[in-house]
Each structure stands twice: as structure tokens, then as C-alpha cells.
Length: 158
Image 1 (cartoon, rainbow, N blue to C red):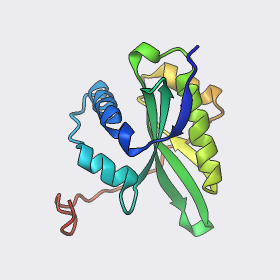
Image 2 (cartoon, rainbow, N blue to C red; image 1 turned 45 degrees about the horizontal axis):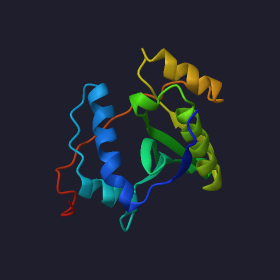
Image 3 (cartoon, rainbow, N blue to C red; image 1 turned 180 degrees about the vertical axis):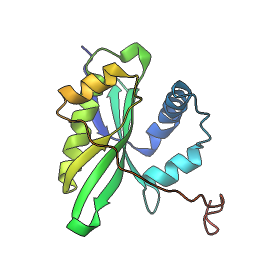
Image 4 (cartoon, rainbow, N blue to C red; image 1 turned 90 degrees about the vertical axis):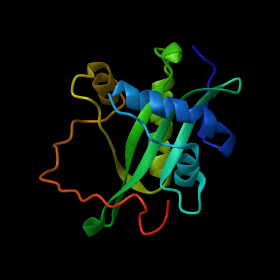
């Protein structure tokens, strides 16, 4: 078992997290276009969009969890989505994913959240079992949902 510390990400961590994000995207047959500047903007900028939690051992990052805010406005209820969970292949099976999940749950509770969501690929039975073991239950899929894409300038902001 690794002696791992779990903490919020710092600016110095982002160059090590970026390739992990690219690896997770590749695993899902996506091509990541995330840049270091965008990662900085979205995690540590003036209006952070996500919370990034990292797993570290001896100054070596082993994994991360990325959290995004959710809400059920009509009920005045806050929630959190664990948008990403990634552990380097060489560090898997050591309980690091579970530690990141626990840290994500704890962070969400401290933010006043009353629920947390996470999704996984339908064929990823190991991840599904891990989430069920961690205390999650299967959630009914919401639908129908619609989306509109905006141009990449987003009202002049990169």
C-alpha cells in the first residue's frame, strides 16, 4: 500500500495532471484538446470552474479527481459531480482511487452539498463496483436533455 497524501491541487501540480487528463480522454477514445493555460484557468483562475484533488507520494502525483458543481435550484440543494477520477496504471489496485473518492465526498460535504454524482462507461464493471462499495447507488438517467454549442470565443474569453 502506498503512503499517499490527498490534497487540493496547486499550480505546481498542473503540468503533471495534464497528461493524466489526456490519458483518461484517450482511454475513452477522445482526443483531449485541454491546454495547461485552460487547466490553470479552470482550476485556479479568477473564477475556478472545477475543484481538482490530487494523490501524491514523495512529490510524485499518482492520480486526481475533478469535481464540478451541480444544483437543484428549485430545492435550494447543492450537489457535486465527480467529473473525472484517474489513477496512473502503475498505482492502481493500491486503494488510491478509494482515497480520492473519499476526499471528493468529504470536500463535497464541506461545500454544503447534499448529493454527489459520478458516471462511468457502461462496460466498466470494476468502476461500477468501486462506486457501489463507496456508498453510491445507481441513479436513474435524466432525460430528455438538450444542448447548444457556442463558438470557442465564449463572448470574447478564451
